Length: 264
Image 1 (tube, helix red, strand yellow):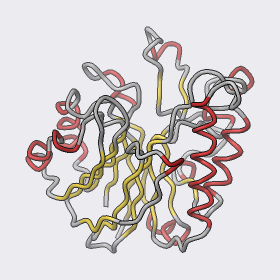
Image 2 (cartoon, rainbow, N blue to C red):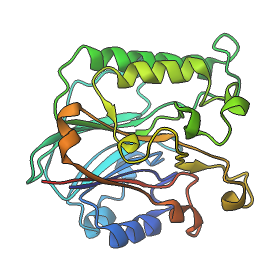
Image 3 (cartoon, rainbow, N blue to C red):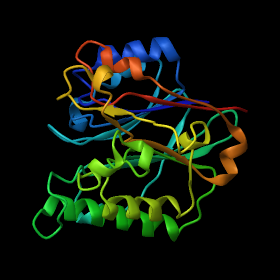
Image 4 (spheres, rainbow, N blue to C red):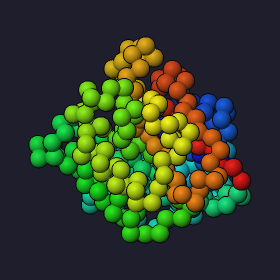
């Protein structure tokens, strides 16, 4: 099974890019974040035309929004928490009934947290920290088997997940309060699948700011997008790719797709 996760930064605006990705990579499942489309306007017909017959999504006008697109049947998970008591379309989950074996799949879009890393002065940062704390507790108190968690988690946890560790320690997405909470979440039953293929001492990015005029030259990236798996899936991991060239596509997202391959 080939799985892609991508913060597409407006699904309807970037449908042509999704079509290109689908044609180039032939993924079985695509998880999207920041779809920015309310459910009644979700472009289901366009996505089915790309081969994704099975869709599970939650969206709202203008921001947030998550979606799972699949060639395999989906069984949506019900009774998911309302994180931080906000129904703001940041999480969908489903069981993917793949021929190689079903997996439980969670697609997250974690709050960005604003600019000031002070929960007392910045409610957005307080929201982000509470969101990650809640998710960590929830996963720690449930059985997690054959489970994959993906998404834009808006935190770069490791030293080499950012272009300059010391400079970014006080910048939202790499501050200790965020990275410590993310480590607690992953320790609730997961393994960092991307770092199974690229060692922690090597640089690894999935996001380059729109503010960088030449993102390649500056290469001031961060790894904000993640793929985690439960340990029972480790023997099935067969490959991981960051589609960095997508950052140069016409009208690109500032995030690039991450591909995970699982062997039968």
